[in-house]
Amino acid sequence: MSKIHVTTTINGDAVEYLCEPTETLLDVLRDRLDLTGAKEGCSTGDCGACSVTFDGRLVSSCLVLAAEAEGHEIATIEGMAEGENLHILQSKILEHAALQCGVCTPGILVAAKALLEKNPDPSEEEVRFWLAGNLCRCTGYDKIIRAVLDAAAEMRGA
Image (cartoon, rainbow, N blue to C red):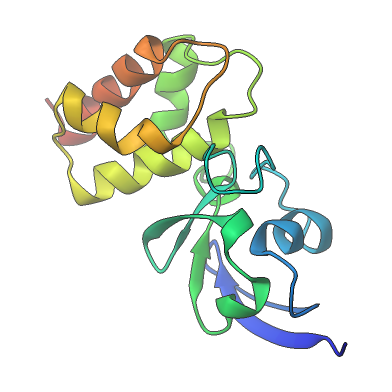
């Protein structure tokens, strides 16, 4: 099987890589590009640990073939902070102690950011619905929801 050459944009940077036709975007991000924030939790798109945005749309990178990224824009957790300055969502997750083992945290942050880009003033129900595809086995979600709502309010200047 011959490898496929892919040119894409990841976190605002032009990136090129070679991949097998059956290789997932998650595998390329982690194993070839050393972007290890997205985690492999289930490999079936059910847990959200590998969430990234693909042209602004929230996707499970374990379900996307790496070759499909050709010409598209991918955003991962590594692109959220600006240098040493955490994104407000990252700060609020820490402030609210809304993480424990950390496996789900990158996916939740990517999903929450995608939500707030579409809806800067979500209700608690909307946050819960939007994050329903992200499984957390440790925290129980309440602190996560409060952190996202708090970040949304601060981002709006409320």
